[in-house]
Image (cartoon, rainbow, N blue to C red; front, side):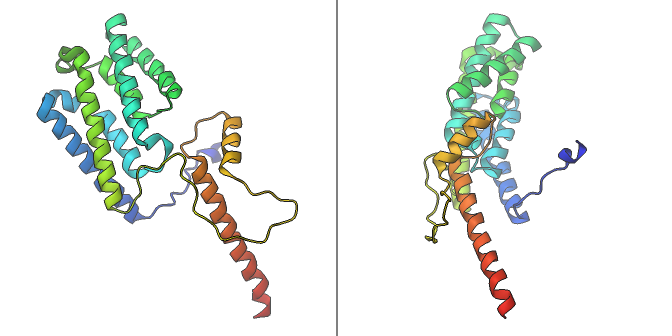
Length: 235
């Protein structure tokens, strides 16, 4: 049981860590600063937690399904609306904040915009500071401004640093050179992977296209290793 607690190895290099860290710092700084200029720094600083968490996704794991544009914009909108509605109906308490976060999760799943930091946003808006409470429903404006600004920063920075963003859900995997077919086997497609993910009924921050590309790349490496093992005894 304790072996399952061992952290998985990170497949990225320190250069990528630095790239993501710089992007996260700049994106969060610009988003909070701009929000502060428009709505006041008290309101902006109150949103820095969810924005910082979103920045980790948008800059460090930008290929994930939870980091795409609709995820952050839709997720923030769902969380903000549900949180403000809960605050009006149930008051601003710990119980209503937690209920708002749970309801926001259901709504995000239904609208296909699951974004984990939006759960923190729902809690933040219910248990808000006096400046944010005074805005009432107008608190939607700084929330969406921060999300939009962070998204624009991610679009610019990721693509300037040669990380393609956003990643379309229907993006096909790169073509793999044709190989002689193996008798009795069938090629795995994105549709097969989609069905397999649906059968598992769990959340996975990966698209079927990513899995298909990974499988094809693994098959290519396996073929190269197999050829090397065959040729090695002859050398």
